[in-house]
Image (cartoon, rainbow over all chains, first blue to last red):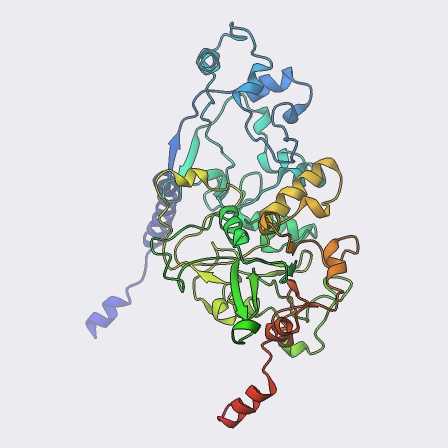
Length: 204
Length: 269
């Protein structure tokens, strides 16, 4: 009997407080440690100032991120596109990134950029369908990347190797584009706008 | 797609073009035919007669992209409907437990999403045309060859099912071009690899429903038929032959003598 009564001991306020504080601390630790363990960082080969370049060009994003004649999207422009403006032997600016860039330019080597938005191999994404046919703004999926003055480090999932931008940057990952670009987000937009949702529309 | 059996010489160029287009690999032991993968296999049939009368026909067999008859009205999707809704379904799609394959009413193409496939092989068993293949092994790509793979088709891994997609990535690319140019995807903008490769022009590809396309006219012919038509799978691949025995065999037709024999030996009536 005595042990039974001991088990039914009344909880004091301090006990409850300890529980709540413990839970909060535990979750905070979990939310902090999980992304740290899961994602690794890679630096970009050199810095790039989108904001500065946007001021120089007259056709917005499409000045450099162009469509090819066959309708495919060129993505990140090659060094040839850069040469359209950076044509001389002298750097156009005097930042350390510019000096670094001149090395690539002189060697005529492609810059090994890390692509934040690269999807898995079995995904077919058509920029032509979204930007040209549906008339969506680039910012719809890429956010304010075009207004940034430096490149943030590229983070990738250690297990899958995919960019963190695909899963999303929030700790729970419930946001939609531009914070997250998962299949659910593609499907939601297709569903809401009555676009064909068959598998092969986006897969290959 | 319409395949003229009388024009087919059985050379196999279509199979080769298909494998190259769709990143189908070569296994270590390709003599193990039951486990090797050929999206478009060429079958040989003969009329079963002795020498002077022997005739041979070749059947290139891609995925038939069966529609069944239930979904879509003639105007929406396809125009030959099965009247019995109980019998009307795409055999592989209806059995897939993982929704790794679907029938697209807009294009009439049966997809296969290998990343979603769990490898149960139910669809392989359900397909009456043996058009589906299971990856029993990882493809042992020789060193350096993965660089030569087509970037438009995702290679598959061991443990999933794959099949002919009517070169769907080609449609995706053709659409891209059309979006940019503001036009429509024309008949010659989207042709499959096998169609282009066929040296005798036996394969014709296009939209069956579009009166401007060649296939539309071809399937009106009295010599056009489909494989196992009586099963009501409503395939999108038509064959043509002026030879009656070929047409009969395509529907697994038994001669009267054989049918009586089968019934007498205790088969189903």
